[in-house]
Image 1 (cartoon, helix red, strand yellow):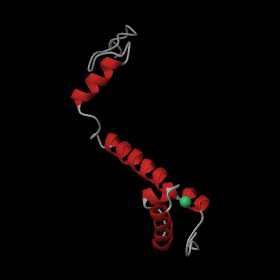
Image 2: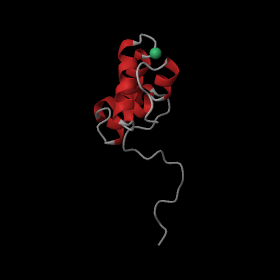
Image 3: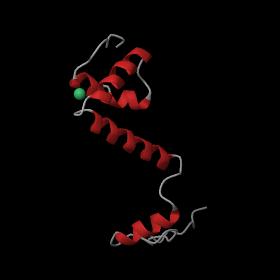
Length: 98
Ligand SMILES: [Zn+2]
């Protein structure tokens, strides 16, 4: 690393996409990869997608994902999904283990 100077190839850019989005690249590498994806019509959609994907993932991890309301509606779309807060009831060991 540290040697991505000038215009890099699509392969190089795509190979560092996650690191770019994660902010794990050295500043000069980040510049090179970012400069590539910003002008490359092949790489930009992937960068855009991965960035959106990661930010959604991050929001879910931080508990800022879909609202409870949305989650309920999503759960309603999945056949057999238990309602929120309801124990599916598989297993009869209801905390009698002391
Ligand atoms: Zn490219």
